[in-house]
Length: 213
Image 1 (tube, rainbow, N blue to C red):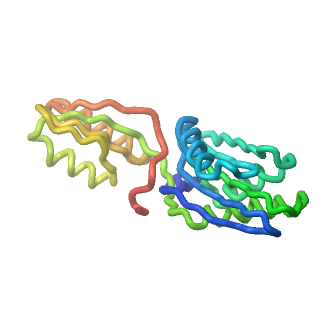
Image 2 (image 1 turned 30 degrees about the horizontal axis):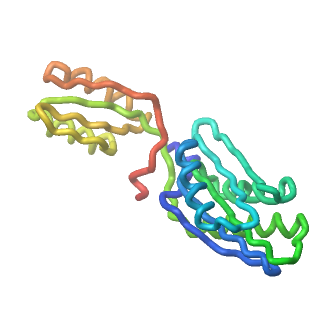
Image 3 (image 1 turned 180 degrees about the vertical axis):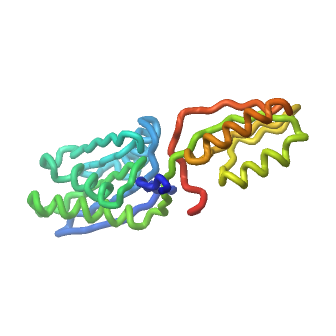
């Protein structure tokens, strides 16, 4: 069975939710590490500098999911956790959702806050384009030009996708191979070393499922 236990969003999205005068502006964005999280948080904070709260949650790492929530002054568990709950309900990974709240003068109470933050986050997530993630084995393959047809035949045969194409004295490609085909591909590339083909493998990684794009 294909390894498609995770989904991610492929672009940013936003939504607005209101309740008794309070306005909640939710933004969802792709995130793969602390740098991308900090960048997106800075952008949203600058967009709403006078908001009463900037609450958020993120979920990273398909291999061993890591999660974090921030209530930013709201009562504990009423903001970050509802946002994270909206993320979890869609089985999303590598995502950050931030909700900026402007207080409307009427207290919502803990149940009201939980509902509002979850609804705002869920609406932003619903608008975001999504794609399944699949596990791939990366191969760095270097070969002379006369092996181009052979390598391209392998790309099609094993349903690989290609990145970082470099054409200089020789050709260098980064190929992403599904784990179920990796053993056979490895053997074929070893056999092609007589023709000048060189290759290295990298640790498995999750990538956008090209078959669903």
